[in-house]
Image (cartoon, rainbow, N blue to C red; front, side, top):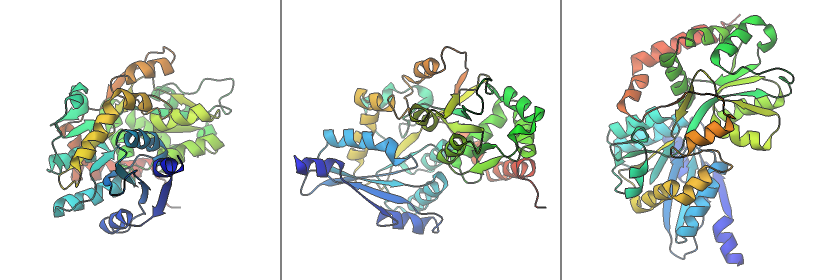
Length: 365
């Protein structure tokens, strides 16, 4: 029994070792990837290597479920930021080198580009056919979750009054009072692939984007690489509102932290499906396919729909409607398609980021 517990649950976590070192070298050392190994119950195990941006705490129950089904497969989980992961996988793909058996990222435009550039192998599996058309592309890229872009707010700060329920409400609040000066947080869209994607989609979806940027600049918005940093700042009360935070992280945190409130914007709520693919140089593509199949199986969906709040494309709409307590919300899933490549066009990206800097980042005094 002790042997089983050690093999299944004991995790040796090291920073910048083995594959993490490779990631650091491939990205020019820009930040350190974290490698965690989950041992197998076998003397000569196979090893599934997953490279991802998903917080390890969200992946633990899925890895545990996978190893219950496949006790002879060890799992090495490498976690990095979206831009670092994209750079590392791109370099490995261009050189035909192994970096992982499965790549999962919330930065879906970058994932589409990698697949479009021929970095992925097709996955033949009946279960992936259960995904809606918008959540799969070319039989190579698969949307595994159903994650809204939400606003988070500090409940104590809004005691006795409604938080902003839409972008229009947020714009009005930023204009009417200095209360939000320095107390709004969002992604640094130059560092975060998913933050950039949400911002680019906002600009395409609605006329409010220009007014949002104006309000962010006037109120000295604070920007961060990751959802967790934004949520932490709102929980502490240093920020009162976090904008365009990944709903999976926000909803999971709100379950445990009574300081956090979550709003699905009523004007529209963007939804992304965290996407995975099997790289061509994968060493164990069968194990990678088995992991994908687990995520899409009844067992995997139960985990995704549970405390992680990653949800799935099959159950996400009804689950979010229940969370939103019946309030009308227009969910707008972002399709996995070549249309996402427009956001990565160098000239368009440069213009978009230039506009962001001019509007949002205050000039040096």
